[in-house]
Length: 402
Image (cartoon, rainbow, N blue to C red):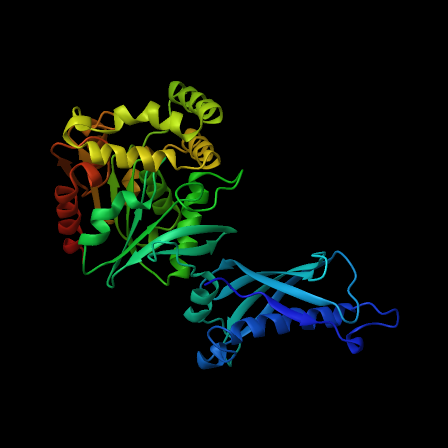
């Protein structure tokens, strides 16, 4: 569901001597709109049921036009950040008669207990504000770091976070999401790809990793195994660098630790121009032959067509953002030794033409205690080329974790 718009009437006693809605009354209307919204969802007592209260920590209000007695104002509320103990809500008020924007506001709340100590945001609040099923009925829309991400969540148990490659989406992991029962499988679309928002700016490995950390906060997933393929592997390494304490394990698939060479950086720039000129279809045409094991077009045409369609559906802004993030990513080789003590699995297809077994072995040799698994008959996309073998390898690793 989407958060319902709330219509409120301006009364004379809320206005000043000049007949304008005064600022104190406007704050009261913003507050009333929030409670009316909750009354239509989890209930006005959602916080008291959880033994907490949303204390306002910061408020920013901009007044754009005057409102007068008798005006009906339509309030829209959007969750723009959801942390463990805090959340940020953006509200707008428009006059219903002429759609004039009257005011915008942003409120930062911290949930506190009776002793004034921060406590977790009640899950019902995030579910009500965030969850908006897609047409498939399986995909949630969750707002983190100011962008709306599409994410699929299945099952219960220890969480595993799947991070797709470029320019793909969460459905790359279709077989693994269906087969790895006993685990809570979480598969988001990275910002700019799949069904997630595609802002013009704001792409980097750090941003992708921060998005995922915020997403896990919303889902109340504490310590996870992260599994990243290609671009997703770069993101997983950045996540391990920034949020090591949140990881139970690390799976790096079809990826590399080195930064781009000067030649590769030039190729990224050239690909950006291809995307600008020819769109996602031009990128798919250019990349597709290198993603699969030789002969895949004849032996698994449906899989090749599925990946082509997935790539062609990618937003151009997200493609360009991902290319810039990959071009500018830091070198991770020096930090591989710091992963000692973190169970790590490196997976690669034996016929990977992009990041082959030699590249994967350099990672596994550099990470103390890492395991290497080479998937026979797979190119750069083992989860779809050899789904059964890939899922089996992942299951064995997951079941081995303490």
